[in-house]
Every structure is written in structure tokens, then in C-alpha cells.
Length: 180
Image (tube, rainbow, N blue to C red; front, side, top):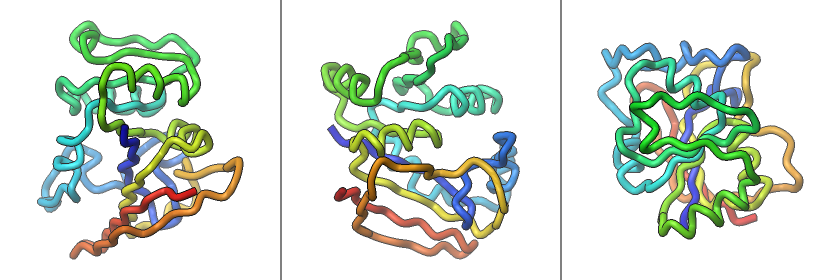
């Protein structure tokens, strides 16, 4: 089973402001004017069976109004109970377990590709040695502070650059293989 990250960061490595806001990220306000590019996201999502995210990411996505994951299976990792709207209950579940335990459970369902989202969740899966691929899009803005994509790691994580692409708007997307 393949386990991937697909995420955007500010140039200084933050995935959100300290309060969780994404106002610095073009299109975060639902206004797609001038965007015209999805940076390979829809193609990536077609390959994903199951999305795993933390509670904070889940609550942020819920605040956007429209659920953007359709019928895709979503598992929210949280040590606290979360509220799942009735309209999402068929496809969204909550779990409180280690990344390794969750991967074992999901593997038994026959899933082929997991998408890991959210800072703490990504860090937990990286520390557990479970992520094979990371697609990181750097947005040309400096926030100075915020929620970092990467935090403390148990050990160095070696990466191999598979490809890198610059977009006309200054975004730079790099795809890495985690080789430990």
C-alpha cells in the first residue's frame, strides 16, 4: 500500500497561520479567480482510496462549507470525540490509535493508496516510517510564524527528489520519495 502526502507550504515551511487560517493560500477563500491550475491535485486524488487527517484539519475542511472529498473514505485521527455530520457518516470515521495500527487496519480493507493530511498527522506518520512519497508545493509567501509542516523527528529522514516543477505564479512543486 502506498502512503503519500500532498500539501502546500509557505516558503518558510508553514501550512497555516498560528490560528489555523489559510488566507495566504490562493483559492482558500473559495475564490478560484485567477487560479486556473490545480497543481495535479485532481489526478492525485483519483489515485487515493482513503484520506487520513487529524482533527484540526478535519474541522478546517468542515468550515469550508462544501465537503470536497465526495464519497472518498476519510479517517480522522483524534484522541477526542469528534462530531461527524449525518450526511458524511457513510464515508467519514474517527479513530484514536497509532499510525501503524491504523495502516494495518486500512490495509486489511484492500486500500491501495492513502493520502495523509495535517501537520501533526504527517509528522506522526513520518516518525513511524510509514510515508513513501511527499508532494510539497511551496507558495512564494513568507509568514514568519504559523503551524509548521515538519516538527521534531525521531531521526533524520532522507529524501530523493523525483521531480520538481515551477509554475508561472511562482509556486514550486517538488515530489520526493522517502528513502529513510
